[in-house]
Length: 296
Image 1 (cartoon, rainbow, N blue to C red):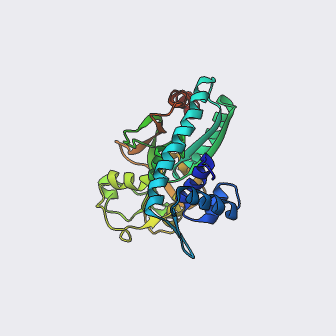
Image 2 (image 1 turned 180 degrees about the vertical axis):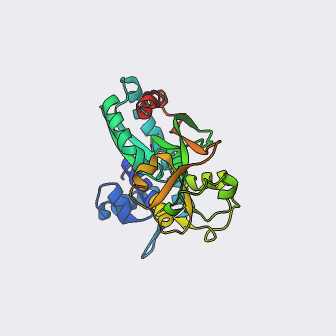
Image 3 (image 1 turned 90 degrees about the vertical axis):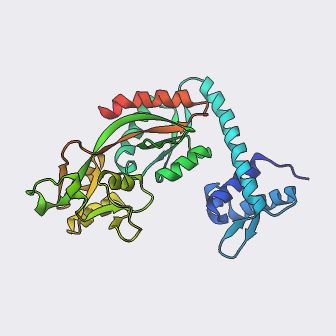
């Protein structure tokens, strides 16, 4: 009789995450039949079904859901055993799974990768872009090592280390450039374009302008900062963008970019990681190393 292995757990964890045999197989770098065979073998070992197989989608059984949660904990513990050895071997090296939110990734990630290559040449970086809620969940479940987000995330299990602060800039149609810059109170009464649900930058803009929490569909939304800026250029409204995005997103777009009156709204950018990680001290040293280089 076959024995339960870490390979079984990793393939089933991939199926749990993707809820699709094809996508799980692709993420695991094996063929779909091979992954299906591993999951079927796991079910035979346990003597009970873990997956309800439908024509278009799969669902985990009650046992499958419980097993997936426990398997995730086992895999996280195994990864942390490997991290113990890495922590004792000297400067940070090897695989680093880095999550980055969409309102940072296109603007800061290239520079960050360059600085990491200079200061930590033995790192093998695996970046992933996702919204804050998903990054925090993946950190907690051991699927990421480190995440670059807007602070604070206020999750007790995660440590936070700020890198720098940046302002939010007002973007409005170019024909309004000669008009006085609106106050935050005036901005709240203007047609303000926001990112769609799930983006922390949307929540920050709502908080800054003290906007009511309207249901989805009652606020003008865009899927990206680039879309918001193009909508402003078309005269649909105004928006706020982080300062790091301005050079790329507002170049040759027919919009005016201006700073708001003091106290100017902004955000703090920083790293978060699991407090329990054996590499926590290394992540803190990495963050401290990058503070000066990213501000320079």
